[in-house]
Length: 355
Image (cartoon, rainbow, N blue to C red; front, side, top):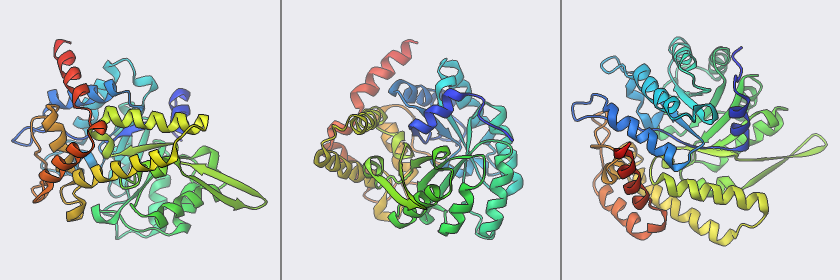
């Protein structure tokens, strides 16, 4: 079974990392814009992220479609830029893994060979498989690469799972983390409770993917009576599409929350208010008004405005900004300038061009 080869990364995973879901930079003809993609990776590193997730929903699942077949190339470009930085050994490097068991195993082999630490294993698009079959798939993938579980919301291709599924999922030895992204408090609670009752609570890091509830997730303790003891679990960090934009400000907020929790100095009313602001900003970029139809395009729109990528093109013709979404992005940028990192990005682009 493939275990962590780098104890430093495992420690960081458990302590809690800030991990943006990395978008895909494209040209207008839908070829990969490698120059912009590499620049985007360098931007995240300059922001002080704790890791990067590539080949995930934000990267666009269509990279796997036969007419594009970008999966390996995207992972290679991103890994190369991470290793060029000299920081790769201390970064949590996550590769998205999708599809039926044979495809998932192939992607796990690619990710492992390129130096990724974990595979973010999506169960999306596999509605024909039972929960037991998905658990068997997870066991097979876990023999190749440590698994980062992924509870994806149904509106973007996920499905609802039982508490029993997550309890059995946690029993798989090489499951090292779980990202909860059902955008649902009840379903999130199922995962946390399953971890606490699994007996592997210290070995499984909990990460929020709930872009609608980021700040609340990061500051909330979960406590369950397990036998004759009370087990507490907290979200260690976040792996989020929201973290792909305005990243410097989000890193600063993440660090503020982690430090405040450690020292007991958080001003909870102020923090909760900031949480509402972050949720409002996310509603604009994720196009909540249209059931997340323009979520990836919204991310691209922000990055394009800042000059980090050239356009908002997506591999799927269905993925585009919805009516009124651009105006919503205007609104939240104007409403919450303290959460926007435009000044940092300008300085980054200036320095990056000199390098």
